[in-house]
Each structure stands twice: as structure tokens, then as C-alpha cells.
Amino acid sequence: MAEKVLMKGNEAIGEAAVLAGCRYYFGYPITPQSELPAYLSKRLPEVDGVFVQAESEVAAINMVYGAGSAGARVMTSSSSPGISLKQEGISYIAGAEIPCMLVNVVRGGPGLGNIAPAQSDYWQATRGGGHGDYRTLVLAPNSVQEMADMTVAGFEFADRFRNPVLLLSDGVLGQMMEPVTLPDPVDYDVNSKKWALGYNGKEKSERNLCSSIFLDVDELEEHNWHLYQKYQVMTDLFSTGEYKDFAVEEHLCDDAEIILVGYGIISRILKTVVEKCRKRGIKAGLVRPKVLWPYPAQVFERLAKTANQFLVVEMSCGQMVEDVKLSVNGKKPVYFFGRTGGTIPSDFEILNEVDKLVRPD
Amino acid sequence: MKKIFSRPESMSKKPFHYCPGCDHGVVHRLIAEVIDELEIKNRTIGVAPVGCSVFAYDYFDVDFNQAPHGRAPAVATGIKRVRPDSIVFTYQGDGDLAAIGTAEIIHAANRGENITAVFINNAIYGMTGGQMAPTSLIGMKTQTSPYGRDAATAGHPIHMSEMIATLESPVYVTRVTVNNPANLMKTKKALLNAFTLQKEGKGFSFVEVVSTCPTNWGKKPTDAHKWLTENMLPVFKLGTFKDTQGVEKS
Ligand SMILES: Cc1ncc(C[n+]2csc(CCOP(=O)(O)OP(=O)(O)O)c2C)c(N)n1
Ligand code: SF4
Image (tube, rainbow over all chains, first blue to last red; front, side, top):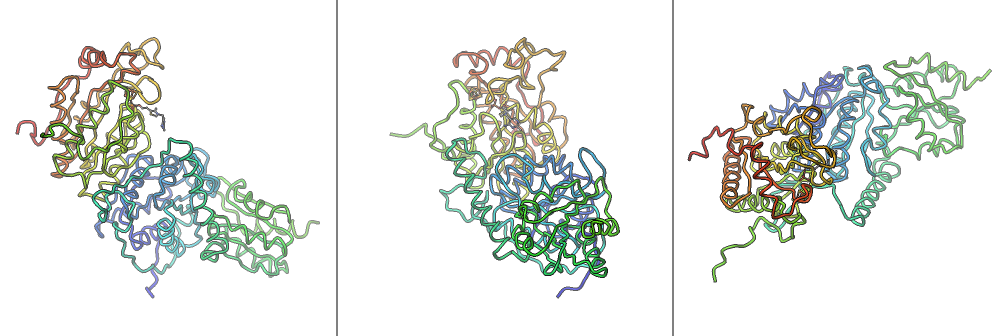
């Protein structure tokens, strides 16, 4: 086991990417994710990798499209406004089925908003963001350790599913310093993908094409159903299959009357709230989705049978709460508490909300 | 019998979908001939734009990526950085390269990416049905400049070759046309120069081809080159704007 090192979340993503075999990074500066490109601009040349500061997020994502098409493990990162600019490219990448790793260190919006931490890009992340019938696998870490681990896992998922993977983080996690055990290095070979441009193991007569255009309506329909089936496979793997434990964390849910729900940094606050509740005799539990798409609906279906109510807490005006409602499907009431604009709710505030729900008088 | 004219090996068998009198097909063929002559077919990767040549990948028998509108130089950058031994070219129209993708072409050129950009300047948006392009001529009537392009509100035709030649990194920037056999041979030579420079790792090369779009100009295919010669060439002067390696002298 490697020893622990103290790192900022954004840097941990960078080092984990290198260890996962990523040798290409393309990005454009934006707060609060700048530590990541800064780290990689220094680190990648040490391993004969390539760091390019692009002229815009639009260019950066298309460099990712090119590098991914050529078979590389490649990453880009940004924060909310920059991710908005990348959406057209992400849609092309999803359509052409090019693996890549995207990082959004979310800040407050809409518009220029501010640079404080937020969770208001949940809809953009989980609903596609760009145009067309496509899905992005969305991972939501809540510690520096998970930022590293999920980066490595993300590259594996991207290759396995030939799909973009998005790591959804926020300004707190990105800037936070914590001890982390770094993963073992992976030896990645750019000639491991037979479909890639320039793949050197081809017969002379073969050629490869990376494209998202299907002008014929029947062909596009067939392609879209093919993508849909892939997304179904992913949904199964993350809900009942191989990755079901990866997808969600449950804490004290078995006997819980009220289930608190939150992802990312919020889940850490919620853990404190659950402990305080328990001390006060309130049977509270926590569900933390670690994968935001495919959503761990099955957990809510099960808990809707045993718990009385759900309280979703987000740093937004209420986005993920829609997925919880869809999953609980009217069987039990689902409540929401949120702070937005860069404010992080305190455990005290949340506890107050729990009190109101559990002891309505 | 000796075969003296046949399809270049780097060209697929698929018939062109281009309109009669369109120069896209002519330029495709010249690029394919150059790829054959340099014996780089197995390591050439093309990047197709959005525009009439969106299906360029159907006509070349080499690896291809189909890029979002205007972003081909960024996509090409990503490909080339991963596969520095491959020969990477973009093929782009004037809407693609000189409007929506201006930033990408300028910055790929300025970084000195070791790629080749082939720029088809037909002074109009072909694929979308003949709207005004940044390269449309003053007074030119298009679907979106029905009274003729007015410099006061729509500016002047943009000269991409001249702009790119002001940058320090590009090694070769030239403007050619295929309006007659002599110019066609010059275009072929320019493409050969550009791809050779890339093959030798010299840096960014840019070949602008002043081209026809008879369909959206409202001209007969047979009149298109005449119109191009009389109207476009006085504005878009043929010539080489940058040749740091002196390829044209050798
Ligand atoms: C983001 C985006 N905006 C607009 C379009 C529509 N569009 C397709 S082709 C084109 C212009 C093509 O003109 P040009 O680049 O000059 O190439 P040509 O067709 O003349 O060869 C436009 C605007 C698009 N596909 N994507
Ligand atoms: S519309 Fe114009 S550019 Fe497009 S194929 Fe026809 S002639 Fe060529």
C-alpha cells in the first residue's frame, strides 16, 4: 500500500489522471479549478505527456475529441461557465462514442454568478447538457481520496463504455487539503483501441472514422437506439450489477424514519447531522449517491418501504430532488432544503429542518 | 494499353455528391494525389468540417474525424499531439474557418501545430443554402444579403491568408485557385509543399483555394470559373504570403 500524502482535491485529480495513464490534458483557465491545470502543466511533461492551454473551452473540448479519437486517455476540466461552452463538443463526443474524462468544479451560476462552491449544475450534468439523445456518466466524490479514486475509475468506465465521464466536484472539494493514498500506476497503450484514428494494428485496407453524423434517418434512429441500449447496460451495472456498491453510500438507513439525501460536500455535513439526530433520539439515515447518472433509484425504492420521509439537501434551489421524487415515486413525502449562490448550509440549519419535519408542532 | 489517368489510391470509389462545376471535388482529388505521391496514405488522418464537404471522409480512403462546425483545427491538434507521426489535415469552408472557427484556426496556426489546413474559399455558405460569408464580396447578393453585402454594416471580405501570414509560427501560407489547368497544377504544387513540410516536421501550413459555388452564386457551372476570375481574384490575390523554408524557390 502506498503511503498517504497531503494534497488539494484538484491536484489529486491531476495526479490520479497521470497514474491512470492519461498523458493529454487540454483546458482553459477558470476559477475554482486552476490548481488542476497548474499541476498538470508541470506534471505531464515529466512523463512525456502533453499539456495545452487552449484558446477557449470550445477549442479545449475539441482537442479532447481529437485526442480521444486518436486513442489516448485524455482529460479536460473547467468550472460551470466553461462547461456550458463545452456542451456542443461533449454532444459530438457522446455521439461518436469517444472515451474521455471531464471535470466540472462547480461554481455559482447562472451567468457569471460567482466563484463560490455550488451544486447548481446537476441538471446540466445529468440531463446531457448538450443537444441530442445522449447520456454522460456522472461521478460525485466527497473527499480528496475519492477525487483520486473516481478519476482512475472514470478513465476505466470511459474506455469500457466508450462514453464521456464527468467528475462533478465543487469549489470546497477542489481546494480542500486531505491525506490521500494514491492509486497504483496503470500502463496505458494508445494502440489498445482498434477503432482509433491512426491505430497501427490495422490491415492496410481498413480505415477508421470517428463521426457523429448519420444523415439517413433510419441510420440515426438505429444509432440512437444503440446508444440507448448502452445506457441501459450502464444503468443495470450501476443499480443491480457489478458497480452497485460503487454507486451509492448508505449510512444508518435500516431503521431510519427520516432519510437525508445529499451528494458531494453536502453529504459530509449530512453525516454530522445524522449523528446529532441520533443523539437526540431522531432515527435519521443518510443516502449519498456517488454516481448521479445512472441514478441509484433502486435504493430509494427500497427505503420508501421502511422510512417515513426524505429530506434532500443541495447547494442549489433544488435539482437532484427531482430524481429523488422520481425514485420514491409518491410513496413517501420528499422535502427539500437548499442554500444557493455559494452559501454552504450549516449542520445547525439542516438539523432545524429535520426538527420541523419530525416534530411538526 | 498504359493507364495514364485513374483514381488516386487515396480516393475512395464513392461518387461525389457535389454540384456540377463545384471545386470541392477537384481539390479533393489533388489532395489524394499528393497523399499518394508522398506515400503517406497509411498514416494520414483527415478532419472533415461542417459544410458541403462534411462527407469528405467518404471520398478519401484514409482515417477521418468529423469535427463540429469550425473546430477542425482544434480536433486536428488533439489528434496530432497523440500521433505525431501521422499526417493530419483539415479541410474547411469559409463559414467554417473564417467565421465560426476563426479562433481555432488562428490559434492552431499560432501554436505552430504541425498540421495542414486546406481552406476552400467560395465566398458563400454552400451547405445551408447560400448565406453571406465573411469572404462574400462587397455588393454580393446572397440569401442573407439580398441588397448586396454592405461594407458599412457587414464589413469587408476577410483575407485569411494575409491574416495568418502575420503570425510568426506558420511556415507556409499560400492562396491558389483551380480556374485553369496552369493554376490547377500550381494548387497541386502548393498542396505538395504543404504536406511535405508537415512530413518533415516543419510546422503549420495553410493552403487557401479560391473556389466556386455555382449553385449558390446562381451561375451556370460553365460560367463559375469566369465569375471567379473576374470577381474574386481581384479581391483575393493569388500568391504566397509566407514560405519560411523557401520551398517555392527550391
Ligand atoms: C454550430 C453550428 N452552427 C451552424 C451550423 C449550420 N451550418 C452548416 S454548414 C454551414 C456553413 C457552411 O459554409 P462553408 O463553411 O462556407 O462551407 P461550404 O458549404 O460553402 O463548403 C453552417 C452555418 C452548424 N452545423 N453548426
Ligand atoms: S452548394 Fe456550392 S459548395 Fe456546395 S456542393 Fe454545391 S456548388 Fe459546391
